[in-house]
Length: 354
Image (cartoon, rainbow, N blue to C red; front, side, top):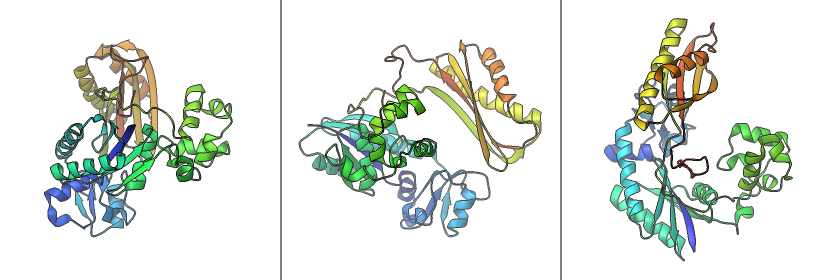
C-alpha cells in the first residue's frame, strides 16, 4: 500500500545548538535574533525545557527572557541549520523507495510503498539519528493532511498513524483550529457559522462554506474537516512565488522621509532576489508594524513587468498608505512573481504540494 509519512524534526534549531554545545542538554534554550533579549527580536525556537515555561516561536525575545530568567539565549545561525537540514533530507532520500517532498528546514513528506509503515518509520528515524544525531517524529497517513496532523500525536520521537479509519475517533471532537491550514482568523469565521469542531466542519452544509470563503476555499475547508485531499507526495523542487524582506528597527522610525527610504531599501533587496529568479513581478506587498505592536498589511496587483523602475514607482503608491502620524517599528516588502513556464494549471510547486 502507498503511504504518506510526515517527518518532523523535534525542536530542530534548539537541537542543532545542543549538538554544538552538549553542555546545554537539559537546559532551557531559546534561539532568536542576535541572542540579545534587550534588542527587538522574536523567538525562532525554544527547547522543550523552555517551552514548559510558555515560550513559543514568534514571541518577543524580551518576554521569553522574562518567562525564563535562567534560559540560555542564543543568536540565530541560519547557515548551521541549513546544513543540518540538508543532511537530514539527504538521509530521507536514501531510504528504500522514498519520494521526498521538502516542506522546510525541519519537515518533509515521504511517499513510500510498504505493508509495514510503522516499521519503515522507525527505521527512518534511526537512520536520521545515526547520521545526524537528531531526533524526529513521524506521522503516518493515507493523505498529506492526515500524515501532517498525525505527527503532532507522535511528538517527541514517536510514530502515529492517522487514516480514514480512525480520523473521526481521533479528530472529530477537536477544535477546527487544530487542523493544518486553519488559523485563528479562519477559525473565528467558522465559529460565526456555528462550526466549532472538526466533525462539524466535515458535516457543514455544502452551500454554507462557499458562501463565506468562496467556492474553492469553502469546499477545501469542508474536505479538510474530513482529512481528505491529495495523497501524492511530489518531489518537484520548490519554486518561490515571490520574495520578501523585513526589518525590525531597534529604534522606532518616526520621520516620514526615513520611513519611505527604509521601505524602498528593503524593496531594492527584494528585487535583487527577484532578478536571480529571472521572472517578472506581478504584485507587491507591504507590511507595517506601528509602535507599540499593531501590524497592517497592504497589497497591490500590478501589470506584469521586469522593469525595476516601474516596480519602484508602483511600490511608492503602497508606501504612501503608511499612516503619517505613527511611529514604525517594523517594515517588510514583498514582490510576487509570474508563474514559471512549467507551472501546472496556473500553479507552481510549493513547500506544501502543487
